Amino acid sequence: KAGVTQTPRYLIKTRGQQVTLSCSPISGHRSVSWYQQTPGQGLQFLFEYFSETQRNKGNFPGRFSGRQFSNSRSEMNVSTLELGDSALYLCASSARLAGGLDTQYFGPGTRLTVL
Amino acid sequence: AQKVTQAQTEISVVEKEDVTLDCVYETRDTTYYLFWYKQPPSGELVFLIRRNSFDEQNEISGRYSWNFQKSTSSFNFTITASQVVDSAVYFCALSETGGYQKVTFGIGTKLQVIP
Image (tube, rainbow over all chains, first blue to last red; front, side, top):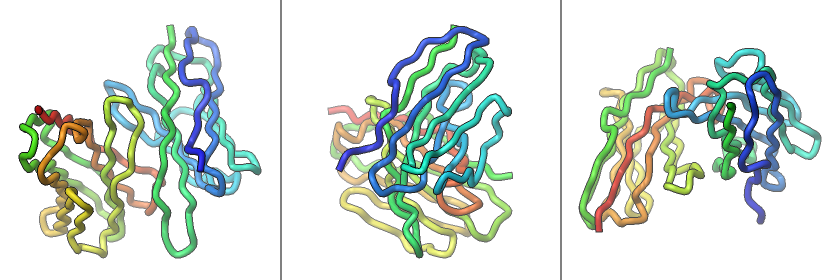
């Protein structure tokens, strides 16, 4: 079974640009969560999608958005990039089984550098 | 507001020693979930355990064990007979909404196991 994949793995952008990151969950998993990790703020929850619906969003400005497609693949977009958006962006998938929650599996992350 | 405190920022132990990573949390909810994650030097997060607030039973998984005490709002993690492969940053986390939504992470404890 293939794991969670994230593309691209590394990205360099300049301030003001926008960026789209992609996450392909494990086959059969319908829940995808996104997290941002920075040295200053640590790990922070961005949002979670389940069956193409955003279930929750963390405390991030509207420049951060996402979506999930019918095949459960998810993208997140950051517009008008700022230096502080430089981070490791992690994606995780879980099966969200009825009656409980499946184990969460993480991708390798996308390291975004904003210059 | 929810908060997770990991007071130990870095711990070094010699291989085969036991080590306990502390986690103290704050929440106003009576229903919540607690998590532990491992982030090895490769950077990919690994889910270790999820515990809901109604289940105070301690859990053991191989060399790993977790002690959940609601009375002290603590969810401590013990590694028995540590190994070099245990070297990583360990994060404790809390979710008030249940599951993987709106998770609040601690700052992490960096564990170094010296051979």
